[in-house]
Length: 229
Image 1: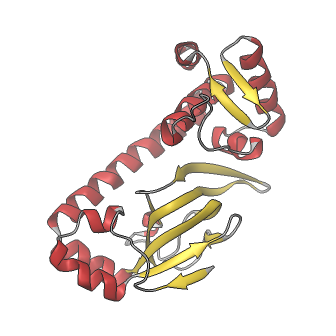
Image 2: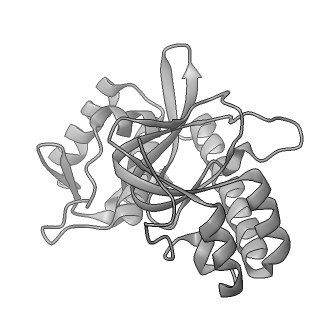
């Protein structure tokens, strides 16, 4: 990890875009900019909560222990996303999840003191941050319901659609960020072997197309039908 102060442009983050410009000098003075390489851990489960991270670029997976030897990926974060917010609580002072870098990334970090001041001074930031938290809660509850009640094939179909929506597609029609099969399995909540079989099944049915680790969704409506089964 490399650390920077005021030399990196963080103006296109969720944080700056929702704060009044008169507050930007306070952010410039108090923020820290961290640069992480692929595979580095930004924070891990049970680390003391230090503050909140606003993504500038790169890709991060947010994950937690699912069983003793397996992880569940809760979501993926990229530019304009926030990580570390799940540590905000009156009942705990540790992060309940981990954040690991999947593609070299840069984040704008503010500690809890600056976060509280920013929240108190900037009405738009406070409102949009609360809406972000509400959306995250809704998605987390939906994920838990899916894991409990949805068959793994339907979860795989839904995950592929969600990943395509998150990252977009290349000129060739492939999902614009390549996830490892293990990370995709951890996002779905299944074993690598099960995911491998499902991708082969989708491919044979002409629903998706693969090229190495890259995946292209050919018939999104057929995937949506699988989700609804």
